[in-house]
Image (cartoon, rainbow, N blue to C red; front, side, top):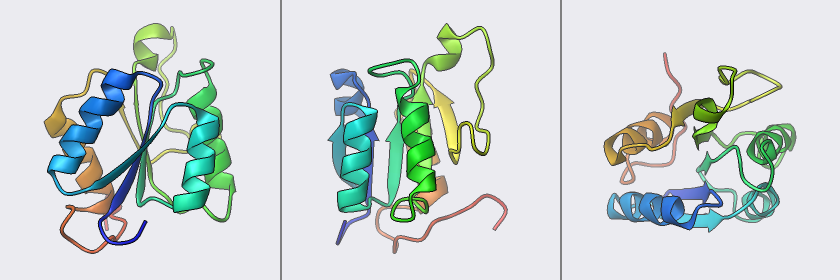
Length: 140
């Protein structure tokens, strides 16, 4: 994505996508969207966004997790930070956390997510919209 920092928001809930889009565009980010893991993979490979915000449970309960695994294994998309925003821990009897290989993501938050928390997570990964697109990692 040329120009503004690009964020791909992936969720099958249109209201979640629209809310995130409004918040992020108001902060100056360029937002594209996808509704499934397959759409996420295709869009990420085509546009190479600076960040992906990904739901885990879409077409299947593991749709987002499988997409994250594929993204991180692909040389074209493996460097894109992924932030999971999902209600998975509200529905699962297990505590789902980022894990290399199994859930290879850079950050994770539960739905519903306040706008301020979403922006904090985004800025923590790629910085404010007005700065050059540099991936920020905790501790660096």
